[in-house]
Length: 240
Length: 184
Image (cartoon, rainbow over all chains, first blue to last red):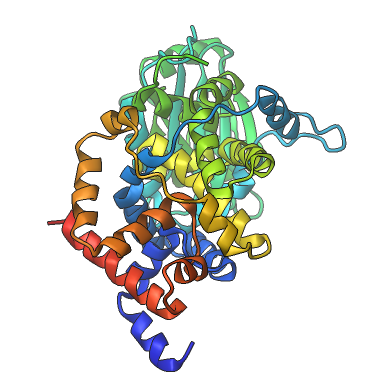
């Protein structure tokens, strides 16, 4: 391509590049470069999203074709049967880490949940026990957890999205109901995906809409039974 | 499989449940969406075996990336189709350049509207079509063919017998006109 062509192609800039990517016409190497940029550049990924939305009515041009019945078995085998490797509890999270880190701020994560939630009434997959989700974040820190509470087992699954605990300090999980003193649910175990059991006495608090918060505490947890360090993330539970 | 056509809300619920590693939801999502996504893979790859491999990859991606759906503003089906399209297009770009003459014969765009799909997409589909009509005819055809078949600039340039950079300039301008029309 001559320099003159390059100049001409600069017309439209990132928006035109996003459009070309979504249209699908770019050569392979350029596509890969753009795909990487989508991961790293939040502003650019918004342009791509807008083009995906703009052109999505063209999807009606695709006809349904039933895939062979055996195909789902192959998918399941790839995802769930890995005898050579111990299955990771949440393979998605290491992958999505970079993505979440690229997001502008805690508000985005909270908003994401807020966007998804209005659609989520228990219906599609019948399930007796309540399941609740909370995005734990705080504007002042980069600590972010996604909490999923399973009312049936009384277990909170915590996915560590971002933010490291300082050396010699621990994160402690709290349940806060109205103006009452926070109730400790214990120190958050270190790990990308961890579980915290909830005592039966505390389940009612969760069911009635208590807030989750995470504070930074001395190693081993708060010595006083009340939060002593700063709250690094908080969020309320929504049913799914 | 003759499950009733799923609503957008049903699919949203399923995707969010999949993001929490709910396998029952994943099974249901597959049942409800695999025909659509296989249609996408097949159209772009125009090879059954390769489309079957691609569809497996697509559902593996859906399983591992479902948590990203929450931050997308796309409708759930559009989000799923985007995964299938992107993956299929990446695959054809990665494979050796095909002989365009054969492809052109295989990939004559099917312009016949599918009544069911048309009903589903509703007014917005009409809107993009009326906007495409504002473009010169061959450019609108190039936009459609590129989107549905995943044609590259090189393939389109050959098909329409214009230099590659001309095709690139055409399509960039056409896309910007299309955007301007859709926002009008």
